[in-house]
Image 1 (cartoon, each protein chain N blue to C red):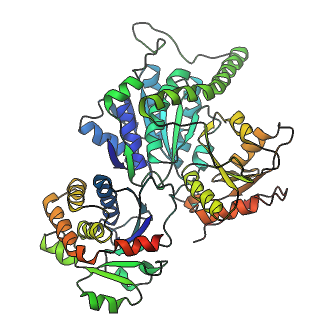
Image 2: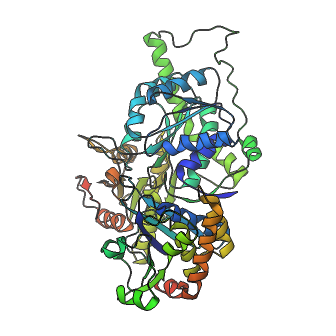
Image 3: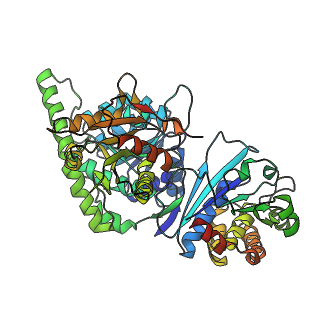
Length: 196
Length: 383
């Protein structure tokens, strides 16, 4: 079982990213995915956490995730604090929305397997949200599918198209672009070994 | 067809597939999404019944009482304070023997204000004459809601289908949504011969003198007891149609267990993981999930009980002054056995506190010592 934790801010579509992932896994027929939102007092801009468990079969474990195999950070400002790295397994991955080069990202978050996904740039290129608060959720969901081998490109593309309330084509294009960007950094085998 | 759905959406799909005639809608966190989804399903043509917007939960139940008296198949969903506000009407509905189906999304009762799951809302309504089903997955929410219509209509008793707030209500997972034709074969329309009808005027709910009143209450209790069998009958009809099977309780690795965990709801799904984790460490752990709490499956739990094998009840609700609700009910069920095992209570998971594998393992490790100490333990969320 692979356990992921998402960090974002209210209004960024963090929970929707986890839901899209669950739908993509179902469409790909590769396993089972449970997407769990952490509900606090909901307001725009407040830190938001969501979780996803991916397994070969039905998931019975229904607690929150305290020791994730990987964390996905949608809001780069949130990655400056300690919360996103709390409980991350040794050798676990940090997937962060950032324009940093692989080398610079590795230096910025030492001791972790870091993958920087230019989610913000991809979102703005496809006109998803204003520059101050770009909507990076669909790009990051696409990247996560590629990084962990959770779903093929067509499955994530159709899951995105159906899930978003507006701009289905732009969101799909963002997910595809991030998927292609992330593919060379694939982490699946290393993480499956860690999960075992 | 498999879809990724929240527990709330699964409940709404079930109501639409059951071809409900009347939905009464009033919002409350975390149940609001049930009625929102039904509005969407009405807009997309999947739900063809009436959608009545009311001004309170008390009115929601009153509207369904009227509709069901006229022979309509009815549905609503609520939670916490909303369920508490319905209390008076819940008694009325069961006394009038109306087969209303309601989803309750478990949420703690205020004060202090809290949005998250525990079972104090549904368990404070346990004496209202409604059947109570506690679900452990979103698939089970959909399946149980479908079955509840058939069970309720056969017994003329209302059903409360219960799921954990957020842990099920807002969590997405794959759910097999059956086709409308399949459901129609399993669940034909309800025909109530004594339904209110202006062409045949009649008065309902007249004053009953003590003798009639007692007889009617006794009949209600007999039908509640009969429900244990009816639920199993309809579960096997459901299994035949859809291939998924449900019992009154769900035992897990109990055969050689040295102590048994006992709980209801989503925590009981996690409990199976806890049992496996304990087994992996060489401990003979087992667990029993309580699925149907009203009527209480007394004979089913007795059949699993063995002398010297203690039960550890994980209660997400308590009655101030007498402790964990399910602990008391299990004790009462097992007490008549000549060599009844000890039952130890653990209050956990209140107000949304997480019930983890670690917490359940700690509870089992304590219970297996069988210390014959009746003190109830209070377990805090580790966070």
